[in-house]
Image (cartoon, rainbow, N blue to C red; front, side, top):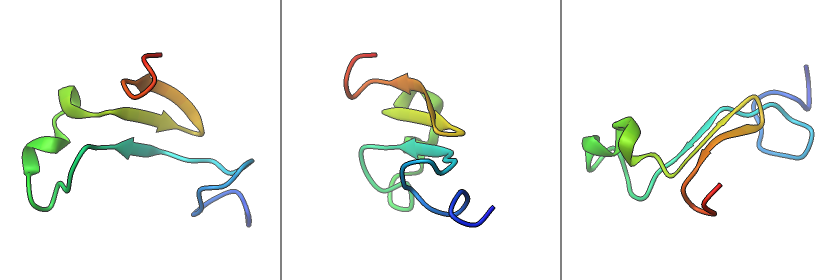
Length: 52
């Protein structure tokens, strides 16, 4: 799966949580109500950044 896993690039699979801040400094950012965007396998499941 070289070129598909372990990177953020067109055509690659991605599971990402986008947060407003550093969860190492503010653990409450990891609560699901605080996620700005969720991507699973490259698909957007939640997007508060562009109001989707």
